[in-house]
Image (cartoon, rainbow, N blue to C red; front, side, top):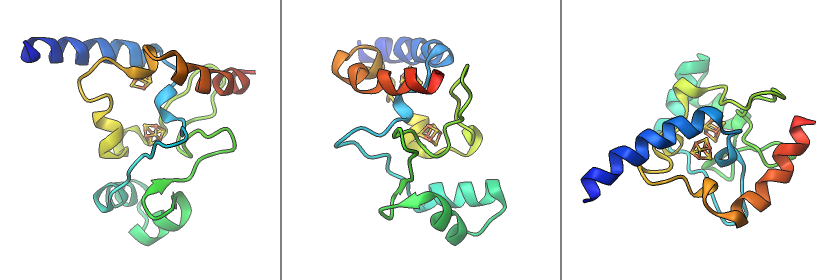
Length: 125
Ligand code: SF4
Ligand code: SF4
């Protein structure tokens, strides 16, 4: 049963992601985007910088990305009409795997949307 459900959920998520203003790229209380040394090295190669430079510019609390004033990831583009990851090819493993072949919780949980949607709306002006 699980094997039948997972590919369908993954496929649906890909469709939703194309039209979603990246709810999952906003920091919420109690949630952490966990960035590993491997993720930092991938970004360093992407930017042709050292791992140390990437840590200094983009990392806080040792293992997560800095966020902008509205809580969005430092790598989320500021485009008013589209919110996209500006380092998509070099994004961390957790970003690649989310929502882990399950239906996306941001499209199902009203409490999450209530937290994030005002910020998204504000940025869309
Ligand atoms: S919140 Fe869900 S649907 Fe939107 S981009 Fe993230 S994973 Fe995709
Ligand atoms: S690295 Fe990209 S996909 Fe991951 S949280 Fe930041 S903007 Fe979103």
